[in-house]
Length: 112
Image 1: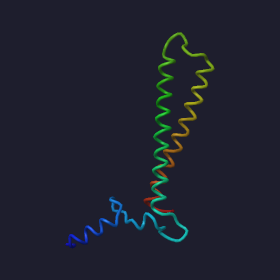
Image 2: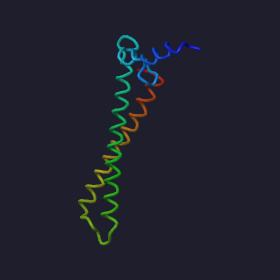
Image 3: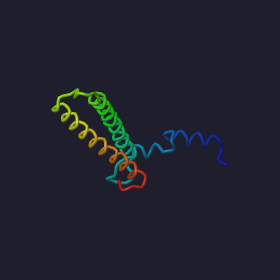
Image 4: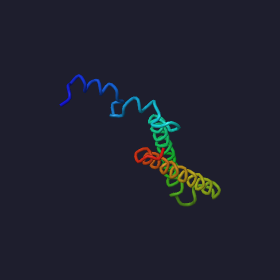
């Protein structure tokens, strides 16, 4: 069993999640990215995924609320415009879901 003092020294050299601080600032090999850069990219993709998904949900609920009434609550042009916006938001959300998953898997299994 390690001495308690060495355990606290080891903990002081990590980021709190067990990732050594040196790996966060030093590349794993020449010409490669640091762990911090890889994690920042992954978190950035996750943030964008959240915002595009939230926007898609809001626009979808708004469309349901505005088009559920009879007779037609919106002009045809407005319905088509909102449909185009929903498709664009769905494409962006899907892209960032893919990029978030890909960056996480690549970070874990490595090809950076």
